[in-house]
Image (cartoon, rainbow, N blue to C red; front, side, top):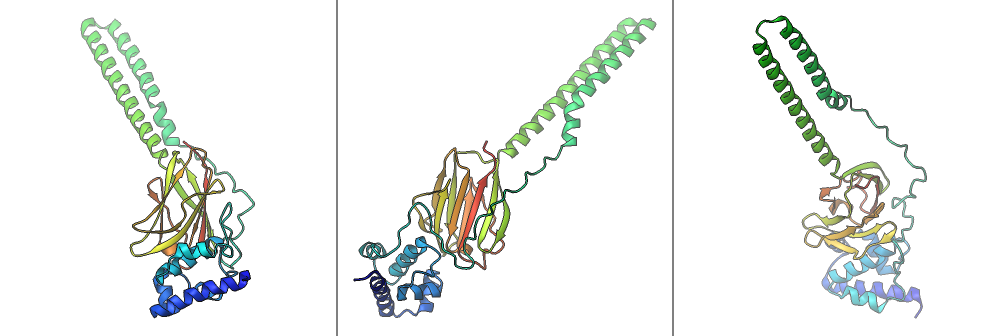
Length: 297
């Protein structure tokens, strides 16, 4: 049997099972969240309009499981004609899916000088200088006074109070610095650009190794594939609120790519923080999110 005929045979098997369940294509679209045009393509053996090889397999399995067939067995029985995934998710041009990555690098961001922090760091030195001047004046006064003992007591008191104030200021500045360091160690995920189903993010202050967790809203599901430094991670496939996908991010992580099949239903968490969705996540279901790790701490 030729490959084209076998692909049609897969579609006929699925269509027959659907009809035996009494489901229309609209019913199946609602149940699987797969667009109707893709369901029709599967039944007709037309895989060319699919967004990529990953989705051919994912959609066939989801279709089969929904109409009461064994999706894994169906894929295995017809493995010779169903596209395989080799080295990455192969994505074809579907008008709004995964445009070419920008070839130019964004300009480096300018660093703003913190004048408030500079003044605070110099404050203990200023206080000590004032204290020294005050001590000199008091000692000079003591040489002109008959009550030298009382003046010596005042000098000791002034030195003690000035030293205590300086220590408290240094302690306060140290606590503020420690708080700033803790804040900087929290991963920050910034949406840089988003258009036509493709979004780019910058990640700063990410503490590696870490975890990327992907799940779905209650009652929803999505198809997910994750690549780290260009290598597809396993497992990949369908996630929901009860069965999330967790991907370990190694120490050398620099690039992360997440291919999402049902964007409105998907929840992505990086290092425990929920990632903000692109502006068009409700309009374009199939999207690719690219994350660039800018700094590692």
